Structures are given as structure tokens and as C-alpha cells.
Length: 185
Image (cartoon, rainbow, N blue to C red):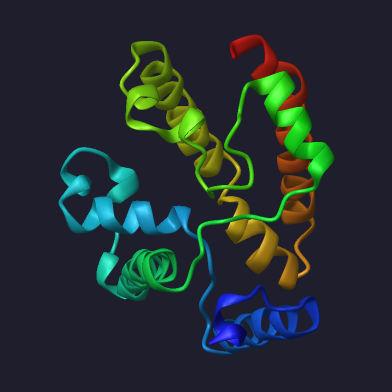
């Protein structure tokens, strides 16, 4: 079981991702998670509300299967294949504790200081989640795809707009964690 539970080395995981992308390209499909939301909205009748959702969602059914597989796989991995501990650099653990008051660093994938029930029921945190979700959703549509779509599919297709988007994602993440996050929290 160790080969399933332990992280795979880059020289195994990388070629598996490349093989998956080659197979998707070969059959004319592209990978990305944000397009699944559009497909789901179209499937439940979003086309009656907005033209954006008026398309043949049945041709994109496989996207919905990807989401179901990701949810089931995530649950199985979390419930049966995880020790729920994370190896973190001791310097980072110290920084998380002193600067961000996260005392459970390394003990859980989702620290209760950020994801616990009492944290998620505070109005300020709910507002941040809703506003952040709207920004992420708008940004994914505006950029023509999400991080996984651009970073995996777009870059494997050698698309320059995807390279620009991925660089923008990294810059945005750095700005958020170093400048905006300390102000908000």
C-alpha cells in the first residue's frame, strides 16, 4: 500500500500526466475543471437564464464524470489512504504559528484555524469566501479557463495565452499571500 499512500516521484507522476494529456488530445478533448461548472449549469437548465449555458451539454458529459471521479477519489484518498499528517519544513511551521496563528501546521491538510466549523460560520469569513468565489469564477471565465485547464491542457498544447495566464496565476497568488492576506487576517 505504500506506493499508493506515499507521494509519487516527479519522474512517475509527470509522465502519467503527459500520457493522460496525450490521450485526451488524441481523442480531441481538453482537461479543465471550470468548464465542468458550465456543463453542470447547462444540464440543470441554465440555458433558460443565460445564452452562455445554451449549448449541447451532452457532448460534454465526460466532464461531469471527471468531477464525480475527483470527488469520489478525493473522499477515498482522504478516508482510507491518508494519515492526515503533512510534512512541513520546521521554519515554515514556526512562521505559520507566529505570523498567522496557525498552531496545527503539519497535523492536518486543512488546519482547523482556517477551515473549522466555527471559522466558517463567522460572517466576515463567509463574505470573504463568497466574494473570493465570485472573483475566481469570473476570472476563470474571463481567462478562458481555470488553473488546471491552462496549466495542464493549454501548456501541453503550447498555447501562449495559457502561458501568460499561468504566469498571471502565480503572480496573483504571490500578491495575495504576501500583501492581501496579512491585511485581511
